[in-house]
Length: 114
Image 1 (cartoon, rainbow, N blue to C red):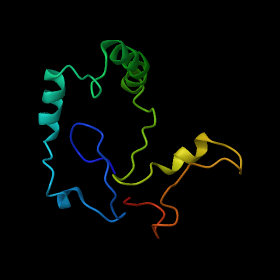
Image 2: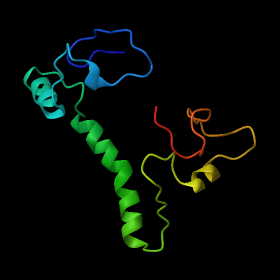
Image 3: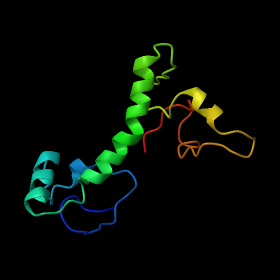
């Protein structure tokens, strides 16, 4: 796993670990990290203005559609689940399925904590 913080130091860990157990490393808060990156000119975690404009070019028509058609479907699903059941209809054919990395880890087929 990558050790939290700047740099690319890696460390071997068991698959059952928690960041809170890394007592020997200082872990900055998310905002502290963003501000430090900004001050150092590291824009790795920031979106460029061009990317933001392109994102809105894609998202705004969807928002407009939902705003103008109150009957437009919006499928909710529980937090932590793998999405609404209707997502299965997006891919057709018995050979095509969504990748579900927790298939063998969770009994309920809905929730999985990696």
